[in-house]
Amino acid sequence: MNRRTVCLGLSSLLLTAGLGLAATVSGAPHAPPVPLMQFGNHLTLDRLGFNLLTTNRQSLTALVNNPLRTESFAPKAALRGSVFAGALRGHLPAPRGSAATTKPLKDRSGKPVEPGALHKALLDPAAREVMKDLVECALGSHQSVSWTPGAQAWGPTAEESAEVSRARQLTWRGVGAGLCPAWAAGAPDARCQELVSACLLTRNNAMGRIEDISIRGGAIATSPAELQRYPEREGAFFGNLLDPAALNPTAEKLSVGQTRPTVDVIYSKAFVCSPPDARALRAFGCDQGTWVNWMSSRLCAVPDPKGGSHHQGCVAEYVGACGARDEQLPPQVSQHVCAPEDPRQHTYPSCTAGGRAWAHPVTVFLPSAPRTGSARGCLPQPLPDARSRLLSPVVDPMPIRTRPEELRQGGGAPIAPRSPVTPADAARVRKGPQAPAR
Image 1 (tube, rainbow, N blue to C red):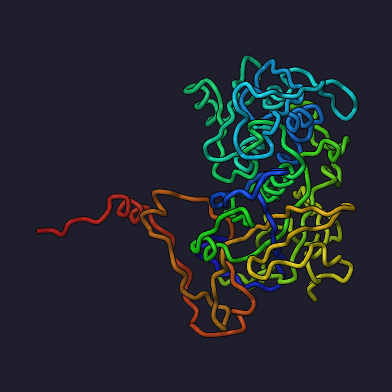
Image 2 (cartoon, helix red, strand yellow):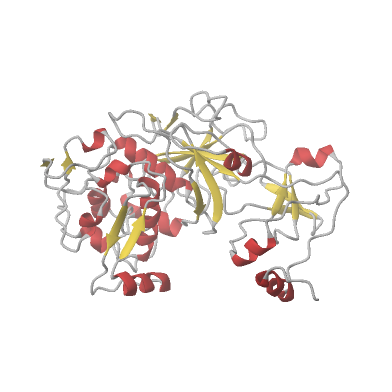
């Protein structure tokens, strides 16, 4: 189905949630709001749930015990758990010459972490994909991390090959989120790990499709335009997938060519809950005249219809309703997982799962749903400027859809599906307006 030819009326419910997010580290004063966080999520289970960076005990131990900066990813980096004194009490890098405490670094099994473990981890294409998202979640727009491949096989994409040919290294940059900029100076504390973990969990997409989402919270700035474009709450994500103790040893990745094992739980501290104001799981396709499944790639914040705690393709464990249970939810679904929400921001100060409270849940907001008339016909929808759409194509994340209450309201006659843009149209738009003939 195509966004230009289908209009969907929602039938059952898409679950949503709230967030209480603070992008400061332990002991730090409240930081000013970080820039808007609008992402194109895409990480599949085979990426976020099976890579040599966050699903390998050696590299994960090294990752959370060292600064998130280029030196940590050098081929022979001595990863000894450096923590710069005072670095995590603020957002500024450690000053030159500042003392650092070091300790021998061992993984959960007691095995010493090998020098260059993080460099070796990034030989895995899945690890590099996660690394890109991790840096974007953690670091500010003025910060970056670089990695030089070396002579070992690393399976680059065409884009990566071009970058290495040009710059002799790959560089990942923060995009303004800055949930843990102090990580560039020293190891992240638990609060920092929770913030970045929640951000990574929101980027998990069951089908690997790129869909625009908005992440909000107390430390994240929002604009009226963003609030208008992304009004639909999806789910509250929280936990800590950066804790080596939370990694299921059975799910560990040990080599690039290894096949992902089938396990129910990869990270025991990754959770998601749904709020009571559910929206839709099924929708009416105007061009098909029947009810169809929709948003099949954004289902991690809803109960598994088969009764399990994990949707296929999702890393986070579904733990119930963030607040009161909606009548649409099965009676066995837990409720009041989170503390009462902020009535203004629709965010939660904390959520409880896995036997403890988590103080940094984050919420995903989705684009608004188009409307239909009383006969389930597609009402006119505003289209983006044709020239900008053709010159800057984007991935169409899902079919047009509409809320169930709008199906009941009526008003407006159905319209025919939009015609696709022809090659002649495209050529004309690219040329721009033509002067009239004389």
